[in-house]
Length: 115
Image (spheres, rainbow, N blue to C red):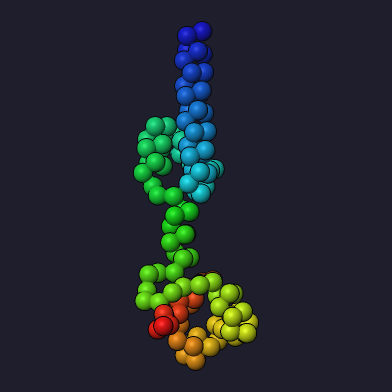
């Protein structure tokens, strides 16, 4: 009876840690299933490791937004509309050097206009 109760508490302990790891992982935009297994087998160690790793949202956000450069940055769609061209034409003109700007995904960095 005592052995069965001990096994039940141990399994409950593992399941609670697994679910908690999966929940934290999804909040940090990481694989919930992978962290569920890690939480089940490693318990509190997996939770500590998961808390230590950065969120993927912040990494993706910094990767997709333009870097700080001289000039102003606007969405490429807005800039293309202001120029009266499509986004594809805008990309071609930037690559060819016809427009002095830099493309960062959906953003374009253009030099500041002197007033």
